[in-house]
Image 1 (cartoon, rainbow, N blue to C red):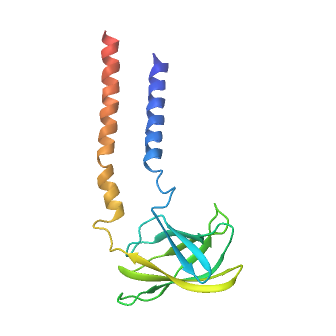
Image 2: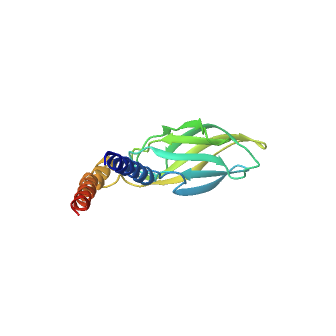
Image 3: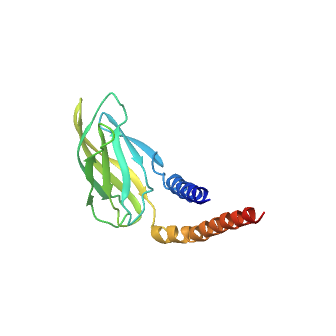
Amino acid sequence: MREPKLRSIVTFLLLCVAVTCSLTAGGASPLATQSAAIGPYVVLLSFYSLPRAGQSMNMTIESGRPAEPLQFSNAVLHPAPGTDGNSIPAALTPNGESQHVFNVQVTPPVKGKWLLHLQLTGAAGAASGDIPINVDGPPAIPLWLGWLIGLVPLPFLLLFIAYQIIWRKKQLAHA
């Protein structure tokens, strides 16, 4: 009698872990991509989060032609004409998962049109240029509050499922 109860609890916990993993597994593919020409080179930006004011942009940058690797040396986010803001240096770090891919980390303070100024080197020499990026305003509610509101029903659902399992076992035991 003790072993089936333990098996049910372990199965329930594994199911909870599987559901949690599947719900939080986002971000494996980019939300949007943008290609641009900088000098003789084609550059591909991959956005893993939407560009929003006050939030760090999670994006990668790489050569648009896989056979032509590029080395990025400097990145700065400049406000475009009509956008009230200051230039912000962007952090470029090599991506640990892919060769010749760089992570770009920068947080635009205000919404509007911005220009990502890049300096790069490739087989045809050094080049620099700007890539336009549209930055949206901040979300209506903070991200953490949205997750909190969305996850409030989860403990009640888990308690309901546990209660149903216990009730069903009692019914089977009386029969």
